[in-house]
Length: 296
Length: 275
Image 1 (tube, rainbow over the protein chains, first blue to last red):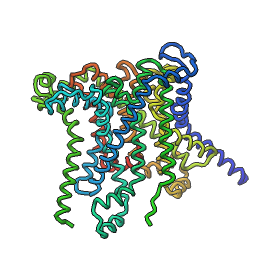
Image 2: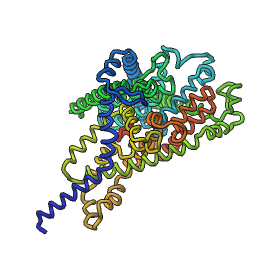
Image 3: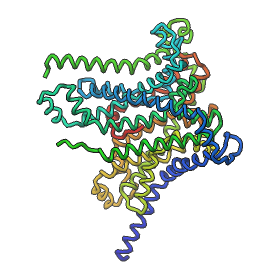
Image 4: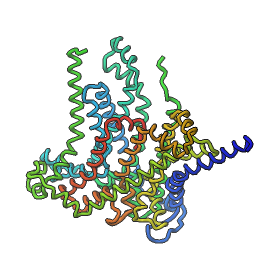
């Protein structure tokens, strides 16, 4: 066999092998990620009640979703939720990380402990908190000796759902800040210390600026995941009272499987997808521009 | 250096850390205690009084409510998805990292682009697709969408596989090893930390998965723990001792696995940055 033929054969075999190894995951990506995106766009133009045959209705779902107030309310509620959850969990996570970064004995155990709520089922966590906050026989009410409608008071429900979400996420956010702080070269800190900088000055002028990439990552992933919270709302409030905690993921679910208006749910899903891609791409381009820090 | 001011601030740090620990642990502790309290004691005494005597009645109550089956279904679902994801992700990542063939890079970018597809958006169309092929309320509907590998795992494994020295693989090749031999005997042993991390993250996210099982299953045949817990809570609203037993069953296996697998997992979550 000539050398050329051997190279060709080898190349053909590698191509066949490559596609054979990719086949299962390629099937998964096409069938369960790409195809659903096409189907959801198509569904947004159909009427389907989960039972009767699907019927083409043009843009009427889009018109009804975009003019009707329930989706608008849901988007506003979601933005308010993000505005409460993301800053608070970021500040608390930064604070916890700064304490853990001191490296005092036992820090590792605290770190593991703080992550526990994050690995637990959000659904089970929400059910747990539903009891803790139950007005008559809940833990908080018993301690306070006072009946407070944490989850059914229209002014309290969303802040409370946000607080439970923060409680779940803080440990996870802490991990990223801790890694970021520990990656800062020690001699930078030492030089500042030699120059007489106080702990606060070092935090403000060295740690914080050097944590900017971490901060950005934590903010963007925080926004993207908060925009998709479902389990917590489902078990804590069911979207109530009067839509005050009806986060967009819960609205999509309720629209499709509660109201059996699948076409409308598909419209909402497409809108959510576009918004999330926007956030993700913004992050991508931001990172491309400022991935590194010039220390000179 | 142990100046007095430093000792004082160390005490301050411990105080802060302890406050955080209390806030983290107390809800779990209260739920756990309540799950061992009899329904009668819970309704007649303060809800926060210690269980006297502790009882397992709530847990046997769960068994009557079909939680045994839910536990088995959840474990089986998690195991099948874990196995599928690891095997198929490893194969794909090896092809992307170590083979050269036309279309490889374009396909890789397609995989990466799908990282932006949120689960919330695919639930509705996936429901329709499963209904069309008649798989609604089956075990396969639970596992199929997740068992063919995850783009994120493939992405991370590819990065990892590329760092394995080419000489190592070439040496195995010279000894007559097939591609499968190379993967099993060279690549996998060199990638243990990332594999353990991916396994843990897959187990956590699948064990906790709620929205998809909620919509695609109905009745008790293929009910998973999260769905059973939500159902129990709405059916027996107010029977908190029983409901707390359910949340305990849903939560404790993961906490045990997490603590047992050790602290090094915590730092690798940062490397992978997943949820």
